[in-house]
Image 1 (cartoon, rainbow, N blue to C red):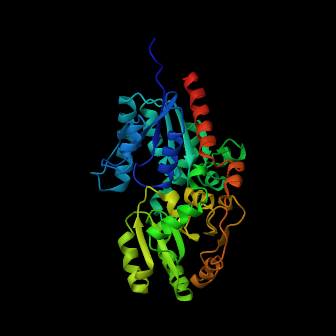
Image 2 (cartoon, rainbow, N blue to C red):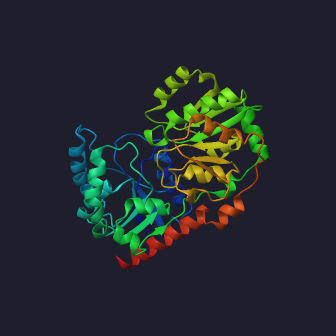
Image 3 (cartoon, one colour):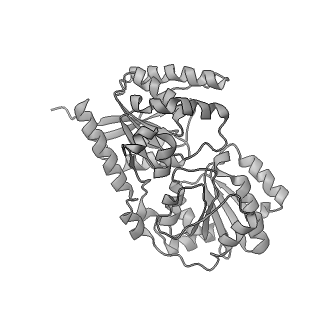
Length: 379
């Protein structure tokens, strides 16, 4: 008797470094992949850091690239047809679309034209940040069409749901918050690992301010460096440890030189051991312009770190009840004082609180698996 093929779900996520990508791969690694498995739809034809990892879990990488088109509006329109072709050729029936804004409806339309029967739209964002007028206008125009094209509405936070979904979905309560689950055991505070990593990084006697996030406008690294300049001025043991890649790495390195703090800032790049890197930190700092509910904020709390967030980030991220929120209008010195208040803070395990709040990755994977097994029976 031939073994039954798993239900295949096409997920939109780049296969480089990023919170959404890490979350989807994390979910995938906790699925029974003989029953449900993911393939990945990407929009750029290039080798990416995590594509071999997903291939080892049985995934296909499907490419709908229009990178040769330089005009953005034209690129958006032509991508519709590329996605249509990919979905039709590969007989895709289920799409899990990780959305930044309602402008992504054009891509979902391409999938529907290609024969996709069931679409989950998953909101991970809560604002436009520095996005141009074009994206804002297209989003406003297309938001009302979401219910006509999508079947299931998930968001990483209530704020992210209200940002993406039309009023009809919100008022009917026709959406669910899917927690950004992580491997709690892996991130749990560990004193031995902390000592090991601080020694490895040469930070044994330092006060380590940490941040993890792509170097893009959204993450607001320029203000983060302004804050750290004040921290460094007030505490000669302070070091800033930055994880992430992106187009703004070099401009931010230049800024550290202008501020005279280049010797106190470590641009680590990407790390495959972030669970260990959080252990080396003393406080986690995140002054983003907007976020849905940042996975890194969950990871930091799971590692027992005190966190200082911008109040542009939903308070839903404060799972342990011990995070601080500050306005981006406050002076860098005010932020610095808030961070420095944690110089003598004690680290402890937050595993119990995160487990009770539903942030264990296995819980998240079980919800995803249950949905797509049920959907497949009806298609």
